[in-house]
Image (cartoon, rainbow, N blue to C red; front, top):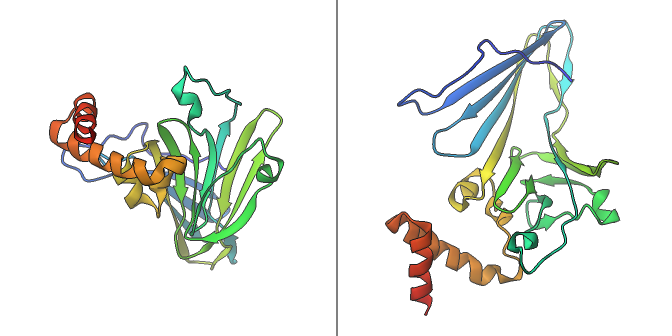
Length: 233
């Protein structure tokens, strides 16, 4: 509930710069937290860092956390609306396997778990919002649904002591944008799984790989689809 402040009213990536940093600061009682978003040109990955400076006169404990909050509506599948077959909702990776969480299922709504090397995401047809914590530590994941059908999928890291007079950094990686396979692969382990092909994954992934290669050459998705269809036939 802390209110962060920025030194500028707007931030803009200048030509030739490799990244754009946006620092936000909150201070109270000798404690200062600088929350920095780092954006990169040409990618939907966002690095998030918290630098906690403790000048309170005593040790202070903190844990980094992220929450994804989205409204959920049940969608009836229709043969005439292809997008209705796409999964919309929360999903996690527990370091070993990918799992979709059905908010209409009572057991999934009460989901809790602690994992190392995982991540969480909120999906829709072509887009995803995902958060990837540091891969070495164990994080606690939890899903909840309120009366307005808003689900909250969150994780919290280990409680860390920030000694008086010291500074501690907490890091997260976010991804907000279209399900671009190459970008997802380098953002988190198996994060490309959010483009979920279901039981047809074995066939669909190679086809999509071929489609991307053709698109890189012709730079047109419609033409790429025609060429891949021709190659298959």
